[in-house]
Amino acid sequence: MALHPSISGRLSLIEDLPSWRETLADPTVQLRLREYRTWQAAPALPSVGISDESIPGPHGPIAVRVYRPPSAPQRPRPGLVWVHGGGWVFGDLDMHEADWTAREVCARGDAVVVSVDYRLAVDGVTYPVPHDDVVAAVRWVRDNAAVLGTDPTRITVGGASAGANLATGAVLRLRDDDNWLPAAQALAYSLMHSVLPPLSPPLAEAFAQLPRMVRILPGDVAEMTGNYLGGTPDPHGYALPAGAVLDGLCPTLVLDAEYDDLRAGSEAFAAALVKSGVPVRQVTVPGVLHGFLNLPASLEPVDHALAVLAETVAAARAGDLDVDQGEGE
Image (cartoon, rainbow, N blue to C red; front, side, top):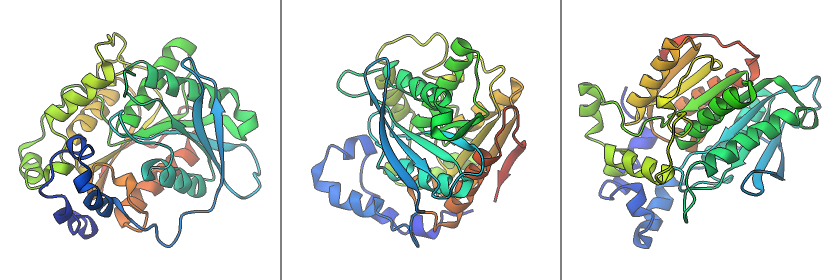
């Protein structure tokens, strides 16, 4: 389908701008960027309990934000460890992809959500530091399930974009080091490759009409992954899970944006999971671009994606996930 009209109507604000990484360093265009990125959550964000915590990690304390439903629990709740994106170089607990998503899943799934403020790959920080932070956060949630009010057999680990990469890398590491897996993974518009598989000709033709600012081209991926790795070897595929052994991973939800250069890589990763015997539910969210979880739930495709995400978290139990290949509307 075509781009959602609420999205296509904004593209004139950024049609002549270069890539995000170049533009973020240019103060003269910040007002246009702010207008492009400003959305009103309608009618209001869900009301949930929020507490900011500091947890121990191998590189120092890690900030996390815990979201709890306002109602009294009848039993231990499902849990979600959520990791925001941002190409490993920007993003925080307040960005919409972190805060709005956590609030929505908390309320819709009656779940405890823990959002992770991992160290970014800036100022000399590289892999494995962000990866280690996320591993430590998942362990903390797992080991403190009773305090958090979660069921340790119903923990989902998920994230968006670079956060989906970090979530998967953490799950791989915990499988190998701790002989433990969460009940499920939930991966939105993920980046798992240093070199993306090519788009199909019809997708390549459709995407060519989009502004440069919303594209993620091969050079962008090489720059992002190179900066994240910083020359550090990745023999286990924890940094770039497309190169990992995927056998034995937990059931996985894959959410893709219809208009996203990373879609081919995400679809290839989903296929590799299936080939390795991992149950996968793959959903292509129509009419949206990469980063759609930064948009409000008042947009129907975003509302649908949040519903699927919350449903996955609420239903997850070790070994369970309905398989629904190629779902889309």
